[in-house]
Length: 171
Image (cartoon, rainbow, N blue to C red; front, top):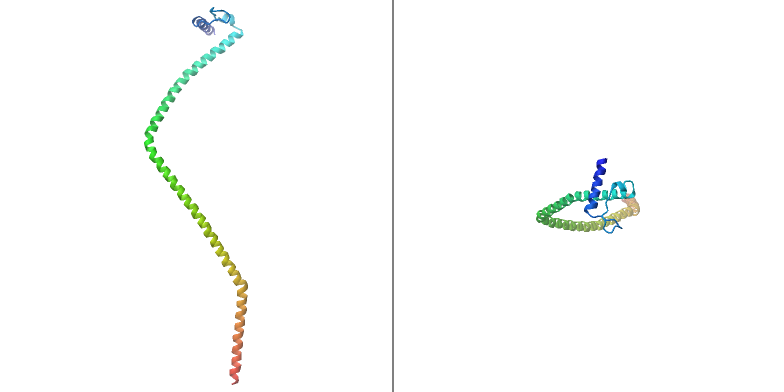
């Protein structure tokens, strides 16, 4: 603990003498920062906070420089990679564009075919309904009359035969 205080004291003395820090009202007099004077006051806390900010900024700068260098290398490698891939990528993109256009045409044709099929299916439905109506007409109107007509014809035939047999039998 004592070594840390001695180090901070020597650092503050060094900064006070080296950088010519002056007090606000001293008109050029060198202000010496001593922890003996400011040990428990607000100035000590403010000064420590400022030094902490300076140290953190220094660490931040030291940490960000390698990141920026690596970012620059990565960007350069990405550009080199794109330069190598671009000649191969261009024909692939053109082929992809043609495939997409073919798919769009096929989709349009399928849509047109579905519309035609829709019309065909509607026509088949109408024909089926017409056949069903004709079947019902035959069942409800023609069959009863046909049966009645067939019975009448059978009766006439039997009656005519009987009449012929009786007439021929008298002669």
